Length: 63
Image (cartoon, rainbow, N blue to C red; front, top):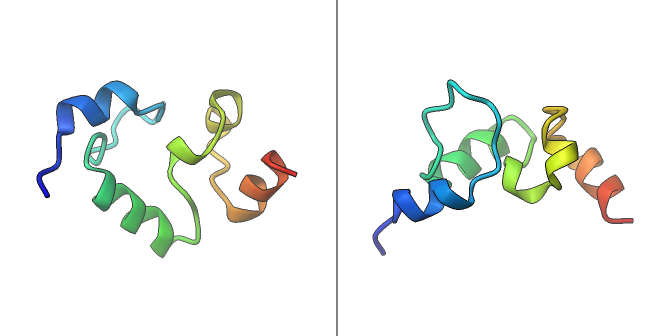
């Protein structure tokens, strides 16, 4: 399957500007998972801006 980076970037809510993985979802997910985190797109915009991408924070968002 081909990655449509342009469409993915249009939907990406990540506010971390120097990120080189924007729009390349498979790389983003792998990067964050290695750190015990989830990507920005798993979080509401107001939580994403805190840069707390922990699994604990994700669970707290959806309790």
